[in-house]
Length: 291
Image (cartoon, rainbow, N blue to C red; front, side, top):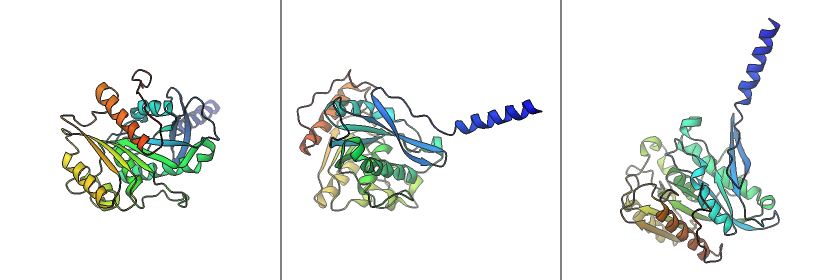
């Protein structure tokens, strides 16, 4: 009987230990836990320049992966981070809750995105980051998370210090889900609160300068959506650059599509130069940044 109790105790300890998620390992990145929700621990993975110091005040960016708010991993934007860190930025990929792993809704995805931006600002003095030059980026549903951090008011995580802004200073969006209205993507999942969470429906004066990459054959995000978003940004005198890629489908920008990857990352680099965050020119080394 004593052995039985010991075995049960060991099994309980092992079960409890599985609740704490170990961070992923990405070559050259340092993991930082930015949020705990129940049994879920969420991490940011920071890529820093070789000569980086905690006393620096470098521009930074945090990327959110795509996957329909259902799945995906931070590895999607590791190549982008490797390039930008080689250019002198602190570049970050974020994990956030998704339906397949945590049973969450798009609301929680946005809350985690805002928490990630806020955490980086909170820790800026320790991480060598300029809190006034912090961008958010992402692809597809991750592009939605990024765009929502920049435009949506509310959807903040309870208990956080709201005196520290969760709004980024720029947006880098790759075929983003930026319209959740009746004619947009994901409406069936957010129809009861689409006006609250849809970036398209929350553009206002002071919107962060934004660059968008979209394929003309994207089966999820029509070119017309991009045109409308551009017009709304121009209406409030906000900077917005759309780059349309003829004949390209959803996800055309990922690392595996070499030519598109190199072109979009080059244009992203140039956009950051226009903001004064990078000094150009910056050539992308495809092999050096591979996942």
